[in-house]
Length: 404
Image (cartoon, rainbow, N blue to C red):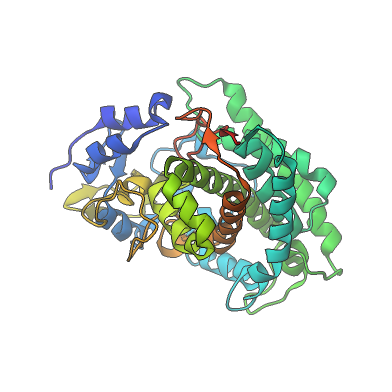
């Protein structure tokens, strides 16, 4: 396959004016599964090629393997394992998963369910009597941070500060040096530093004081791989907080937006609560919270779909384009909660498959079920709603709804 440069299509996808509906542009992009850009980077947009490259051992997640350093990708402190390669990635992920999920801690998410249900119910109580409310500010945004703070063992009174740090860090992720003020990047770096220092203090307090929270478990566990260093615990907690919070906010908000656009499915969910499980999987395909992995690096020369990619090249993975690839999914632009064989890319694939996926799924299932049950005659006040700036973590910044 001949490499074709498609800089205009990618530029339009990244432009804010396309945020409300990038999917026609994704279809255009898929016409060239592997497209070389003017700056020497490569964009991959089709399902088969995405899954192949995500499982390719020659693909690196370590920014140090990029031939051209990218300032916006440089982060202070010890990198989280999502930004490392095997064997270091595998070691740290194993150590984190000992305390976060199966097989060593299979009951973590189920044990959180009463807290999830209570939090969702309390938030829904607050807007039950309102004619209008914002799904984001009043519901989707406070819910995951409350859960993550409980999981980590963070005091509730510190949650507002956490939100400020999260906002600054998320805003800096899609920093564009050509259009954005330098302060945007600096604010994100300062927030990252402040957050790491705070988490480091919590970890120090946990040494020799075993408890049920995640920070305590990681600080006091000597498993087969040894004990995590404090800076590694902080990096893991930071990853869970930032990635876990923002993706869950977007998944819940995108989910409610999709249900309000498909009232027949919303009614089905009211009548059939069990529908929520396949429904959330379809949301992860149809309106995913993560649209783009903005970079990977080639360890060595690789060939994808007949296109040679030189060592050190930056590779951009268009996950949301792959999840609507008609070569993989029948009628991909239709929202179908009864879809079979739904192996979407909503949480990525390969060794970097989102390790917080089970928690995000359950949070969203509980949230959407409760919203469907509680809301009376809900209607969107603006469609499309205003979106966040980021094309990477895509979701509405507000979702205003009125009810009867």
